[in-house]
Length: 145
Ligand SMILES: Nc1ncnc2c1ncn2[C@@H]1O[C@H](COP(=O)(O)OP(=O)(O)O)[C@@H](O)[C@H]1O
Ligand SMILES: [Mg+2]
View 1 (spheres, rainbow, N blue to C red):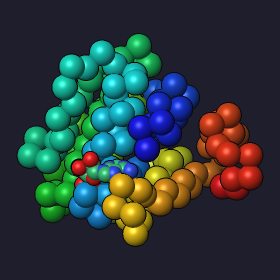
View 2 (view 1 turned 90 degrees about the horizontal axis):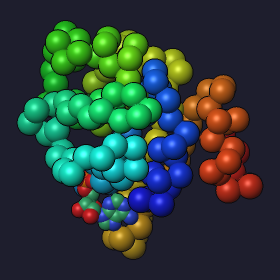
View 3 (view 1 turned 60 degrees about the horizontal axis):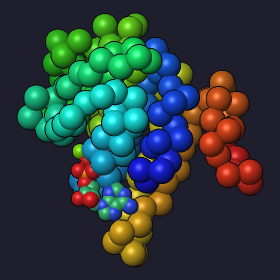
View 4 (view 1 turned 135 degrees about the vertical axis):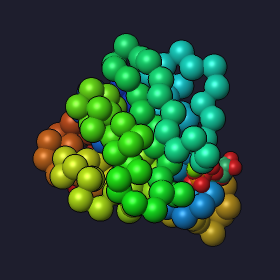
């Protein structure tokens, strides 16, 4: 997971939205933490379980890490700075189901699922054009999006 995050992170740029799907403990925060460490000189990357959003400066642009598990209404998401994040930064969002119509069409969806081996995860990645082309350097040759 960390290796995948380290390959994905350098391909990201402003206005990207990475939506992480998966149950509690699936590894959403761990994956995002690895991406943020790869992009920013952050000492600590705490889970925004209570703060709902954490931001970081990076050479690639501002990094916004949202955890929407506790959000009830989309108006709360707007109050967290969602529009600014969309226009100016790179977004990583846990529980993107809460976004409803706020989720941009051009997002990259990463689904994390548990595996019978508790140290492993099944990962599926979905994104409309131009994501398949952008990700082609890091995907296994046989992978199809
Ligand atoms: N292959 C793996 N990928 C991601 N997390 C893993 C893996 N194997 C074990 N884990 C553990 O599973 C937990 C995932 O927690 P976390 O990233 O907070 O999940 P989430 O944010 O989806 O609730 C961590 O304790 C992590 O160490
Ligand atoms: Mg989490």
